[in-house]
Length: 81
Image 1 (cartoon, one colour):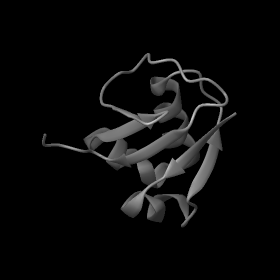
Image 2 (tube, rainbow, N blue to C red):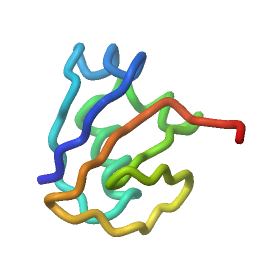
Image 3 (cartoon, rainbow, N blue to C red):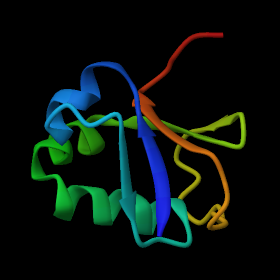
């Protein structure tokens, strides 16, 4: 299982939980599993989210490997520069 920290407004879709656990080995599996276990997240995932893995932010990096001890953070889609 991978622990995922849920940031900001996304917490409303996880019943206020700031951290959830899902079974996943890459970002695509993680997002798919989150959408199944927390259906309220599905519309936001479809619109776009950002994932931070061990302090680095990724977008649309579907097959980025996640280790069981990685720090994973799910955030609303981040834009800008």
